[in-house]
Image (cartoon, rainbow, N blue to C red; front, side, top):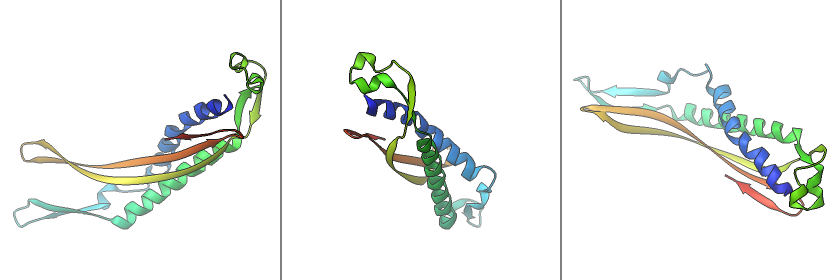
Amino acid sequence: MLIDLGVSSYSGVLSTASYYALDKTLGSNYNFNALYTIHKDDNGEIKMITTDAFTFNKISTLIVDNVTVYLNDFISKGVEVPIGVFTGIRLLSGYGKKIKMPLITVNSVKCDIVSNFEEAGINQTKHSILVNIIPDVFVITRFNTKRLT
């Protein structure tokens, strides 16, 4: 029961941490037109798009760092747990005064930046840059461990 409380309080924070990291990292710091170069032939047709790999890797690293900072800050505040949880009786687990308990987690974050091309009509292609943030979190109690993904 204690592990379930930790998981439920932590799982809602994962997406918030991702949005926080994206906002803090990308905000107004980057000119997205400078992240890639469009190469055209003599007729003005696009032949290739190249990206600035160094900057993309830097962005990815900053996003991971910001997610980790947000999650560590959340963990340091602890989780409010009703005292009824310690009885071991599921019926009483939601009752009683709430106490703050430290939450022990092991987390790692991976960030992939993906460039994608899609057909968007006759002689048109849509180019998008996607950021996939993949947190891997384990909530640990004395008797149990649960993985959140």
